[in-house]
Amino acid sequence: MTLKPDSTPALTPYYETEYGQAYLGDSLELMKQFPDSSANLILTSPPFALTRQKEYGNKQEQEYIDWFLPFSEEFYRLLADNGSLVIDLGGAYLPGYPVRSIYQYELLVKLCREQHFFLAQEFFHYNPARLPTPAEWVTVRRIRVKDSVNIVWWLSKTENPKSDNRQVLKPYSNSMKSLLKNGYKAQLRPSGHDISDKFGHDNGGAIPPNLLELANTESNSYYMKRCKELEIKPHPARFPKDFADFFIKFTTGKGDLVLDPFAGSNTTGFASEKLERKWIAMEIHEPYLYGSKIRFEEEADLFTAEYKLNDKKQKDRFLQQHLS
Ligand SMILES: C[S@@+](CC[C@H](N)C(=O)[O-])C[C@H]1O[C@@H](n2cnc3c(N)ncnc32)[C@H](O)[C@@H]1O
Image 1 (cartoon, rainbow, N blue to C red):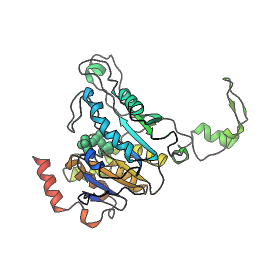
Image 2 (cartoon, rainbow, N blue to C red):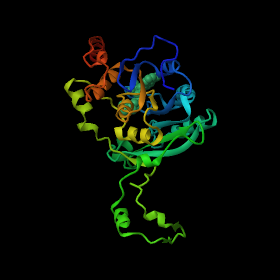
Image 3 (cartoon, helix red, strand yellow):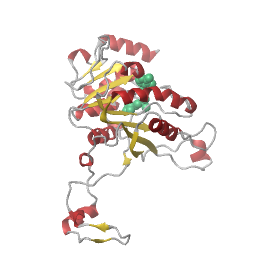
Image 4 (cartoon, rainbow, N blue to C red):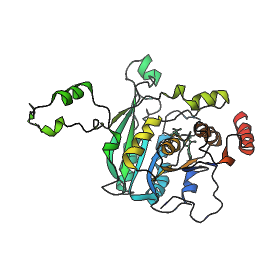
């Protein structure tokens, strides 16, 4: 079943491509227009509960969980029974203190205990290029180290969400390559762990760990280049396309539907398009959604004609908001 507007003809996409539609508005309201059990993957990074207010309207930690739960209730309804919900959550310090908020863990407990999600697996999204902040604790008083991981909860509606780690194999390490070339003698490890002779088989790559090392190397991307040319401010909290690729390949197949209800610059939609998955993106802030069209412009013909970047009405509205 595809995720198409249920009954309300009023829902018009802001733009659409061969595989997806992007909607402008509050996703809590927009999601209500879509039918049950229709999304195979909901992949998103919501606004974080940061201690400093960011321009895209983060909630303070104490309000955050109450704010989030109505969204996740909708996610549960929209997910197919074997679907996955993947939430990327940045960490935060308590305002004024060198101690951490535990909001990600509180949220997880609520999602699993009250909304009946299962924790399929936790992931850690490691960005080696992360800046040493907050400066006060890390570079001035030197009492904390760099916070370089986001927590990622991979949740599901049942114990067996669709997934296949053969779709996300990593290249073998050099030592594994030489082992595959020179053969491996089955033996007991000092730990007593029995490494069978299957260990020496070439499976096309290594099974990845749940630590995803992904730098945001987008600075030279088409999106960044065109943002500069068009004097559009790039979205300040994008996740790397490789991050979206990983979960889309791992938990969906071609033709499945991926939803990002906090789409920002629509990295999720763009990655889905390239991987031939259907997608729905929702974003409340028009300048971000307008800017996200640049991603698809790269693939000249991904837009249906009427949604090209030079759509005059959208452009004027964007310029008005952006410059005010
Ligand atoms: C962390 S950013 C997502 C960035 C995105 N992953 C990317 O790669 O560009 C969160 C986004 O959620 C949007 N947002 C916040 N509340 C929203 C709501 N109720 N409905 C839709 N979008 C919302 C914000 O405007 C912001 O762009």
